[in-house]
Image 1 (cartoon, one colour):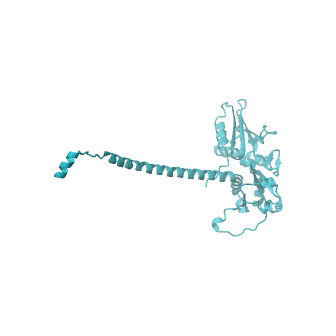
Image 2 (image 1 turned 45 degrees about the vertical axis):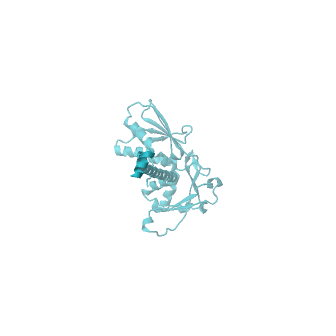
Image 3 (image 1 turned 120 degrees about the vertical axis):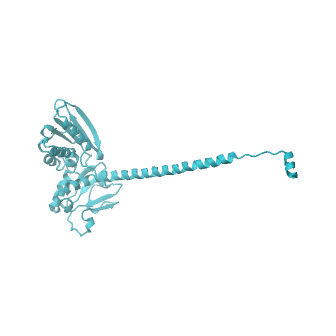
Amino acid sequence: MILLQSHSRFLLQTLLNRVQNLEKGVEFDNHWVEFDDVRYHIQVSLKNPHILLLSVSLPTPPPEAIFFGGLPSGAIEAIKAAYGVIVQILDPPRDGFNLTLKLNLSKLPPDEGYKHALLVKIASIRETVLGAPLRVILKQLAARTAASNMDRRFAIVHRPNESFFLVPQEFVEARRTAGLNNAPSCMWSPSPPLELKGAPAETLSANAGFVTFVIYPRHVEGKRLDRTVWSLSTFHAYVSYHVKCSEGFMHTRMRRRVESLIQALDRAKPELEKSKKTMLSRSFKRMSLKEGRINSDS
């Protein structure tokens, strides 16, 4: 199955175009919205062509989520660690946005490979910000230190009208078959699981049930951490994407089936018309009474 990319393709293309034309004075001001109600605003002025302002608006957080300065817990530290001196966090951000970054494109590294990798990371600002609290907790899990927080329940900003909870617990890993060792356990329930006992009632009013993933340290070790954070953060978009693809595939199959039936009907029409012409081409000779007597006498 296809995994969604962590970076914004439009943002990455805009950054690449801007870097390739730094000496040209181009002014632009673009707004766009991506899945899960994440809004972007990018702005460049003629006065400072090397400076780019990037603003991000996040989904409305649930009341139990921990926010600091309008951002999820750990987001500021994650931004500084990921982008270094290239990015400056503006305080306060632009009106209507949770975060505004000031990018100095003249400080990008000269190496083309490293430069492109850094631009991809900047275009992944959504993952960096929204995945920050999840990344912190999963790092503790990888270090086997999450058990000290096992009584806490963390609410994470996910998407509008949906809740995302992380409950650190201490489990003993059971032996599983070799083919399933790499996959986290996934369970669905129409009612809230016991781990969410005591959560606010408005966060448990789901109309499609509850999905539970069991994450073990082996799922977040080394390079697997980034992939796990992104996969969990975009689970709804991942499922929705494949559901729509399945619907499109079924509709295509239905259209092809209808077209084949129509072609079969069209091939049957000439035979029917030919038989009608044969019936109409028959002729009958009218005989008079005198001819009839002659034929009977003979």
